[in-house]
Amino acid sequence: MTAQPDAVRASTNAEQPRRHKLTLLFYNQPDKSVVLEVDEGTSILHACMENAIHLQHNCGGVCACSTCHVIIKKGMENLPEMSDEEEEQLDEAIGLTLSSRLGCQAKIYGDVTALIPDQSIYLGR
Ligand code: FES
Image (cartoon, rainbow, N blue to C red; front, side, top):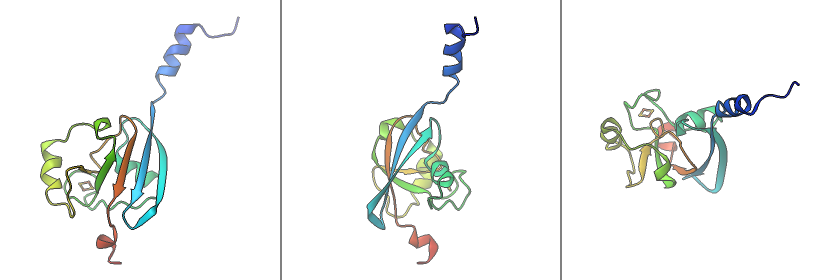
């Protein structure tokens, strides 16, 4: 018989990363939204970069600037708690809110909706 035993099938399925929905809203385009399916543990910045969505990241995603600032609209509970380093960097973010996070530090563990703030301040447009 060539069928896999249940235990083998279960372990194969366990290796598949869980996927979650990341909905992105855009400050400069209020009518636009983009829904991405991302692997669990993917940062918001990484998801944007993988999908050609501009989110500034001057330090390259190492929590040393605040240009990847995003505002979480839904699903804050699906992100890890903020580290002291992230909190310090966020203090420098333009337009800081109570639901602000750094996109490079905010890894997704459930469905999340995030607003990408005005990026023109970085692009000079
Ligand atoms: S890219 Fe610099 S802190 Fe996120």
